Image 1: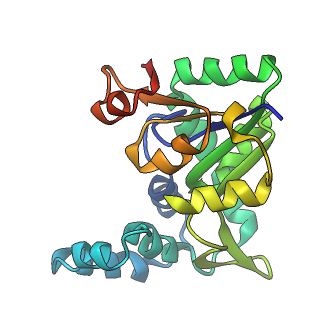
Image 2: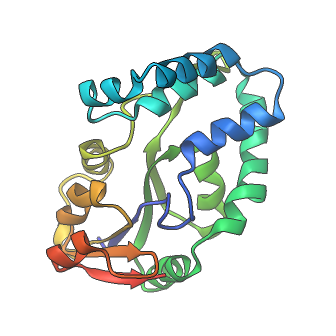
Length: 218
């Protein structure tokens, strides 16, 4: 099977989208749990966020804290705000050369998968618009239609991306696959495939050059 994997944040869109989504929700809803954001600000003020990063190197501390702001919100409201977020914030920030590469790979018969630490709730909008075949991402947890303020499963970052990919598409010849990412944190994913491509803003990135990866310079 011919597969092309695309990171999302700073690969297909020009910023980190997960925390930005939470901030967007907080700016457009009266139902967010503001105490979680106060906790983050306090920890940052007393320099404990850096310590937590060292203790939990494979998890985004900021994401774990900020997502608690969504606790108690209904899935219906978060879905509605995700549509607005996609339209108002994500679409204007698409990185067009990479989006064109995605379209090209789809025309060539590749199955297209997003592989992202962003949240599924807004990534589905992109998938629907561009005919993406699947999403591998961090998911918001809901119980009885209410957000718990937690991830549904591991945060889709670092080696967790590989675990999710292999669960979704097991026993494949990954040497025929393509993968696209802007970040050295995605080296596990890029090294998994036979055709890794680094997405670079303005100039070649040293980590990609050292690996001998092809590059898309945006």
